[in-house]
Amino acid sequence: QVQLVESGGGLVQAGGSLRLSCAASGGTFSSYAMGWFRQAPGKEREFVARIRWSSRTTYADSVKGRFTISRDNAKNTVYLQMNSLKPEDTAVYYCAADPSGSSLYAYWGQGTQVTVSS
Image (cartoon, rainbow, N blue to C red):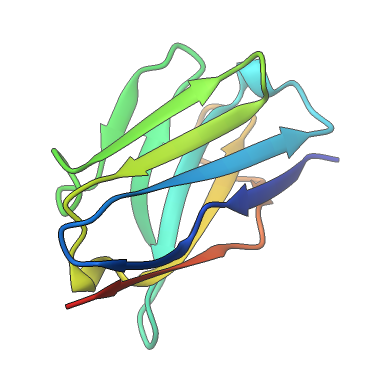
């Protein structure tokens, strides 16, 4: 069973930065695609970024150029560096693991709150 634990959320002013971390245990992390998603109050969960085992990355248009996803396989950890934050980035951020590589995320973390004040 894969377990994912996010950390690094918090309150930041618009224009600021945060780095989220997601530590994985119980699986073969280096072979998984990993993703970050977010859910704002009253809205559906949405895709933010994805990194494959090859480190190839994909981003939502809304965060492209501001957010960077990366991974450290030695630490079984995936990161989301968020720069130039906007109030509309306020949400609970979740990391997820995709063992099959087919965008089927089988494992999810509990989420970490990010609040951006204007």
